[in-house]
Amino acid sequence: MTRIVIIGGGPGGYEAALVAAQLGGQVTMVEQDGPGGACVLTDCVPSKTLIATSVRKQALLDSPSLGISFDGGVDGDAGTVGVDLPLVNKRVKELARAQSADIAARVEAEGVEIIRARGRLVDPQVVRAGDRTVRADVVLVATGATPRVLPGAEPDGERILNWRQLYDLEELPEHLIVVGSGVTGAEFAGAYRSLGSEVTLVSSRDRMMPNEDADGAEVLEEVYRRRGMNVMGRSRASSVKRTADGVVVTLEDGRTAEGTHALMTVGMVPNTSGMGLEEAGVQLDRGGFIKVDKVSRTSAPGVYAAGDCTGVLMLASVAAMQGRIAVWHALGEAVQPLRLATVASNIFTDPEIAAVGVAQRAIEAGEIEANVVKLPLATNARAKMQGFNDGFVKVFCRPHTGIVLGGVVVAPRASELILAVSVAVQQRLTVDQLAHTFAVYPSLSGSITEAARRLMQPQTESGI
Image (cartoon, rainbow, N blue to C red; front, side, top):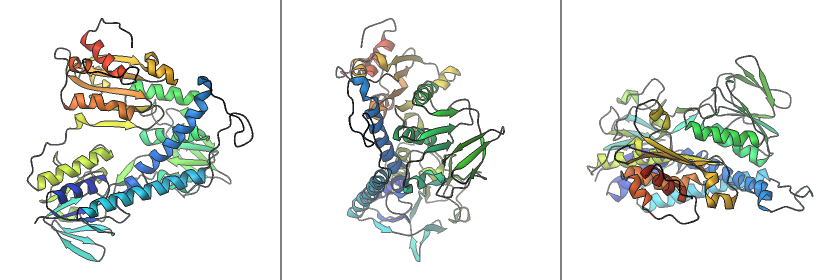
């Protein structure tokens, strides 16, 4: 029986553990924080739970346009929608713990041993877990990453925060300054604005989320500004300091922004130091991320790696697939190398931004030849019924064969809508095949099949 030791219990670790156990391996998972790791306990699950609450509140705030009004809000004023932040945070934490417990029960039911300790490599076949030494035929490192600290802006857990400290706040921040306008910054900025905080988003680039679809980022920034958010472009922060009753953010050009709290979202650093990796022959890049190939192998024989510690698309879904691929490969199963071109991603803002396949910037740069159709969500019948005015569906295909290359959806629940495009990309379907697939009428997904029809017959101007 193959002995497999997994260091880290996040998606890359526990999904690999399940596959290994089902294939007959003797599996030990070493995780110091709890099954699910930081993804479940402090990062992805808590943040999306908070965002779900904020989206629900924003829907209430937007409902007067549908003819719905409120009487007797929490302050006795018509139309007031209150937020009980301690209750919100209590729910966030309880849900995260419950999810961790569910994962523990699932992996233990498959016969996986869980050691609650910090793991490190002694050599490629020996793992030190707390005060135990465990021998292994195969080791998978899935230790994740930690919020990066900006020198001069060290979090104190009270006024200057990283996102793992938000859920200990007793009151909603009066004015939250979010430093960093990538995906994490955009998500939290939108959530706290909808919950009722005044929000300033500090972006070092021309626009928020510079690495994402430009059309989608433009829509979201317009929505944020309309909701009263102050988005500061070309504004790199040099320091964040506490004041008597808040914080002051100093920008590199000398300007300042003052608020009650600052949230630092300036990237991640891998949890790879002090683990004996390089001593065991595991190569790291200059950022400390573990170098892996497309089947998750490291440079050390028998040692694999998965998830954020590898720096390969920091998504839970990618971590899980890397972990599964590692185990399939290690145990001699048929395996398809990781194909990043088929990875679907989602930004949990309001509206959401989901994407899969090629990016429009690659098309515009001439790297890929593709036809593009973009349909505004405001022309979709279901969107009109629900009062959704912001967003679009965009689909890319090859000019001659019509094979679907990718797409972008900006809409409520875009994370669900993108699946149709993701299946098309994964299975190399054509726009003809997608166009001949029935969509419910009326539905937001109808815009996907309509976009496919437009690509199949570019001159068609049929309604939605």
